Image (tube, rainbow, N blue to C red; front, side):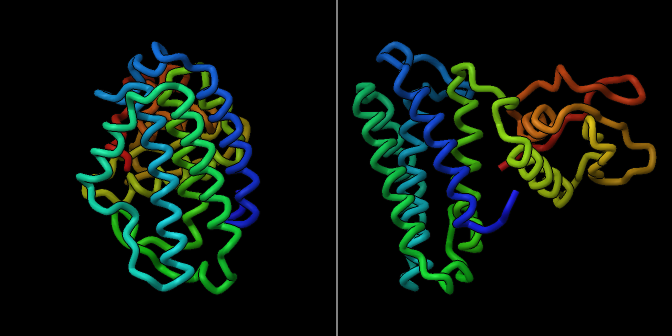
Length: 238
């Protein structure tokens, strides 16, 4: 998948359209039902995605203007906004998602070329502005799964799933106690190594299934382990 933020916007637009179709199918009872995230309803997930778009607009504005804008006013404010927004009627959720997606798209279009070289202060620390569009795409695609509405890792594009897999593998490898495993990607003959290869189990499967398992969004049932045995336990993802 390209790292060019402007080229990636096509992927963001397509992912947003899929998300909006799912959101438009929800009634009030659907929104009040549990998501795949502990303690969150589907309404919480949609509220988070809208506020996340606002946060990325803040970071794009910071990159463009040089102003020290944080992603969120505070973690407490972020939590409150999600909680307050979670119980809104379906039409309000949908309008909010559309409006904030449009604002994000406008903020990307307003970026001069040199602004993409900036570093901004994201929720977890400094982040290159050039990765903000990827960050938004990742939020949409992963949280679409969390809505528990028949959207599956196999609905991801192969290029998105591969980039997510590599990113998650790098994240785990840089942890204090990386689990040793070799990820074998079906149909490619390609492997991704985490930790010490010597004696590490081989976990084989499709790219989407491996990626979803690495980020804690799947139990790994479609995956196989060589030698036969239990799957390793991936560390917590971001």
